[in-house]
Structure formats: C-alpha cells, structure tokens
Image (tube, rainbow, N blue to C red):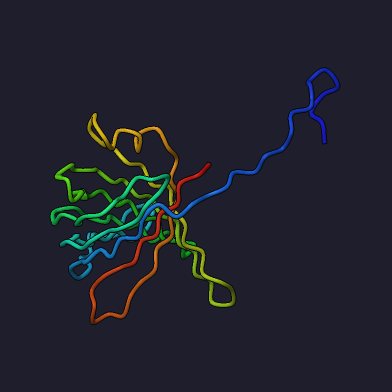
Length: 157
C-alpha cells in the first residue's frame, strides 16, 4: 500500500518487544469515590511489592514503594481505565517513578483485554536510559487473598 505516488516506499518494520521486568504489586482494598459523568470512580492504594527483570544488560531489581495509588474509572460501556502512579526503588537506591495507564475490556463472551502504556521517569545516572524508551504492559489480577496484581512490562524496539 502506498499513500501517494510521490512518497518513497519505506520498508515496513513492526516493533518488536522484550520483557523488561515483572512486578508483584501489593494493594489495599478498593475504595469507592463515587459516580462521575464519565462513570464510577475508585482508588486502590498501593502498599508495596517487588520487581525484577533484565533488558539489554541492564538489571532491574528492587521494591515497589508504598504510597502510590491506582485510580480507576469504570465507564458506562463496561471498560475500565486505570491510571496508576507509584515509585519503585532499585536495589542500588535509585527511585523510579512509574505511570501506568491501563485499558481493561472484559466482555462476557470474549477474551479479556488488559494492556497499558508505561512511562518511567528516572533521575540522571545509570537508569536514565529508561526515560528514552517506550514501554507497554499487561496486568493480571492474582487470587484475592494475595491482595496483589502482577504487572509485566515490555520495552519496544
């Protein structure tokens, strides 16, 4: 397919991805924030957790810090929008800020869709490369007694 005859053909290269890290994030029970014109609002406090991974020779390992939160909107069409902001402390002491925006569509008669865009903010230094990459993720609920979610994050190439 070409857009116009005067535009040169550029080879099509689909992005590839590599698993960057997995995080087990512990949470407190969901709190109801009331109904808004866009849907039902909730907040889930983030209480801690841990993360680990390795990508392109960079080891990523440490703990999820308490104090973050996952703000949720349950839209009238049944889709959930999650907007989580929290910090992860690398084992070397560097604190990374994670902004994870998730779209969840769980139709009754179809597969669950739960994908996210993950933005990392790192200070200058050995982890600054995280500021210059695009990350996508998945979210998996764990059994209720664990009060945690599993987040997997991939770096696009």
